[in-house]
Amino acid sequence: MSRTAWLAGGLLALFALPLVAGEFYLNLASQMLIAALFASSLNLLVGYAGLTSLGHASFLGAAAYLSAWLSLHLGLAHWASAPIALAGTVLTAAVFGWIALRATGLGFLMLTLALSQVLWGLAYRWVGVTDGDNGLRGLTRPEPLGVAIESADRFYWFALLVCLLAIGLIALFVRSPFGAALRGTRDQPRRMGALGFDVWLIRWLTFVIAGFWAGVAGLLFIWYHKYVHPSALSLQASAEVLLAVIAGGSGTLAGPVVGAVMVVFLKNFVSAYVERWNMLLGFVFLAIVLFLPEGLVPGMRRLIRRVKS
Amino acid sequence: MLAQLSNSNFLVIQTLNSLSLGGLLFLLAAGFSLIFGLMRIANLTHGSLFMLGAYIGVSLLEAGVPNLWLAALAGGVATAVLGGLFERLVLRSLAGNSQGQVLVTLGVSFIVADLCLMLWGGDPLPIQTPESVRSPLRVAGFTFPAYRLVVVALAIVVAIGLYVLIERTRLGAMIRAGVDDMPMARAVGIPVSRLFTIVFCLGAGLAGAGGIIGGPILSAYPGLDADMLPLALIVVILGGVGSLAGAFIGSFLIGFVYTFGSALVPDLAYVILFLPMILVIAFRPTGLFGRMGA
Image (cartoon, rainbow over the protein chains, first blue to last red):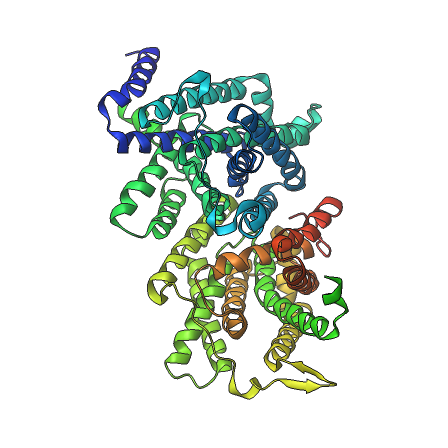
């Protein structure tokens, strides 16, 4: 079967899912979609820029908190709060990126981790604004084009449309000339600099764009849960999304999606039986890094090629 | 806020709290900094080792170890051995792959956190202040909690010991050579691989002992690891990786900023904590005392 036919069949199956799946599985699928978009945004940094960030939850959390705060405290409607929350997230990403990109490699990783702890600390401690450990609750879902998305199947369709659009745009971005330059800065930063590319600017723009898409995932997150807690900004949240990217295969478009599906599945399904999500998360990390460092998708591809030849 | 600042008792007590937190941070950050400087490993298990040390201390004291200092010594040795095994068995197999190493330390930190939760439960476990320094000192009308003074003194002793080790011994000279130029150090016959294990054990042991010594102030609780690791990160970024002096100054600076921040503006203390780091990174990316980029 050709690639296009596979793609069309897959899309059809995704859209038809609510016809066969019950509410529990649809909600699980919606969470997977949000995680997939979130992981795809981080993949821009980890996979295509070669910059491992351990603070990407900042941007999902910032968008979720901003949107929640704008509706609760200023009473803004969704059409106003969503773009303002996204703008705020992009601004946060611009500042964080400017600071974190003073370094590369491990320094970048430590700076993103430290910066994300600032937001986590704010969410936990600045009780007057974030209500601390209680989180922000009492939120609603928007009604895009007048259509309510309160039910599980409608929200799933909405999330599917948004994620397909977003991941499609991410794919276009990666394949654009800018994406090629970005991969150049990952593989040969010095040569790119010598060729006249502004390596720092390319990285910074990518950081901001990754923050923007994480913000979109954050809006979906807050609309899905109608609740946000400081744990959305925790190191664990950043670690989970990084695990999704690396487990699936960084630098591929499908990898983070596969990885995110796996992480959400493990978190919601397996941890219902074994009550030790943290330990499981740790062991999956170890297993992936030690035995499957390139990730599931490239690993499977290699396996398939070997079987075919 | 101004009323508090003009109250001399408040000032004295908070200063002492700052110094003792700084001392604990130094025990944690010195090892983190040396490991990062020599091995280029951002050891995210460092907070876990601190917490593990605290819990081991709780168990040792319950099992009848006569005093805290012996417990700290034994706990430090235990975490040093665990750290050494981790370095030899796991990190070694990923040599040269710094991203893989960070991820492995991250994974292990989650496992350790969950193991501690399993073994010691979710409630905070206090560690008693040692009998000999339990009564407060009274000097010039102020009362000082004596234990905190001991912690500061201990940190200074450890700092001097580390300084002598690094600057005045053959082993220290080899470590410095490894930090500055590893390929050259290897080329002149320095056993860099053995140094890695020694430094990792040293860092892990200091962190574990620090957890026990910090016990009477912080106690042992789930999440202690995640509370301490970012502080160690800031100290090291601030002071410069691989620099002992940087870790020392950075620890006490952060001790002051955090303690006074928490007392004066509790809502924003966590943000204020990161400001010095951001300022330093913006104007001097190698950190205050660093010789290389992070």
